[in-house]
Amino acid sequence: MSFESGINELTQKLREQQDSIQTEEATKNAFIMPFISRVLGYDVFNPLEVVPEFTADHGTKKGEKVDYAIMQDGEVQILIECKRIGDDLNINHASQLFRYFSVTNARIGVLTNGRVFNFFTDLDSPNIMDKRPFLVLDLLEIDESILPELKKITKETFDLDSIVSAAEELKYVGALKREIGAEFKEPTNDFIKMLMSRVSDKRGTADNLALFRSLVEKATKQYLKEQVNERLKTALGDSDISVSISETDSSATDESSVNKPATEEAHDNGVVTTEEELAGYQIVKAIACSEVKPHRIAHRDAKSYFAILLDDNNRKPVARLHFNAKSQKYIGIFDENKVETRHPISDLDDIYQFAEQIRFTINSLSK
Image (cartoon, rainbow, N blue to C red):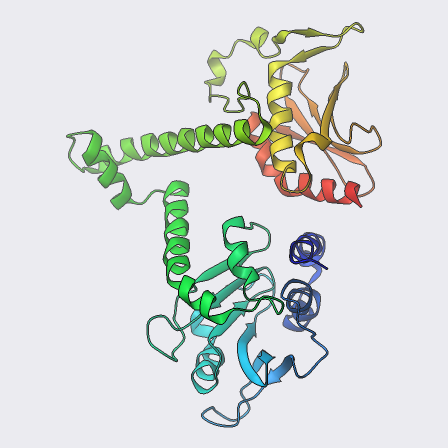
């Protein structure tokens, strides 16, 4: 199994089974051992490669063990400490990992709950594990930029020198991305003050901060939408694509324009395809692109709904857009038995809330 296939398979398994896992042992069996074997490529049943319940002979308290040690040429290279799925990965709860890191030859420590894998090394002080990870892998929100570095940890291409040399940049770039993401999601007062000082002479009073908080949130949301549009245009090769539908005041919406025909795209049977349906289709297509090639996502319009299909096959429904009613719009999501459940949405942005379900459907139909 290839590195990429291993990640995709484990991600799908995680989506399907995470809610049924209740214990740390079940987490290990369902997700962590498959990660070691299918993604990293080590034989979990070969004690020369993977040692469960690893105990060092010196320098540690009696009875303390690390969940897994990954070996190469008789030396410990990677230590893995496991928590239950859903548990927070608090570095303060990884005392064994810290202790064993300092008394073995390991240069890589991993703290994981089966979904998130935090990778540590010893950048700050030699032979002492850092408190901040240099690489964070979330299997349900994969940052594809880190995958080449993760691949260096696999058995086939293990390259410790390359991993450590790139770790410092990875550590700080990753931490900065997470901080930027947190600021975009919920801006802090310091962030708002900094931006306000650059565009206004207003003082940092409580009223002004409240005003600029809403403005900063709106500006960042619009900026991110614009970036998504640019990525979609590049990925789909269409300079006319636009899914950045502006937020409007519902009291001022002209309902007669909601289903305005897109460039008079009407069919002989009376079906009219609207701009809004096509924009919704592009959003679903963009979500699906993480699982399949863009050309495999097609659409067919009908009088009562707008169908989005895999391989232009009616037997492979990805989603349906129910946009014909004036009062309420719905997106139809399919389960593994191809049973549709309609969910109300207020605008096109709400489609992104169903990204995981759409990807699940795509993967189910691709089998």
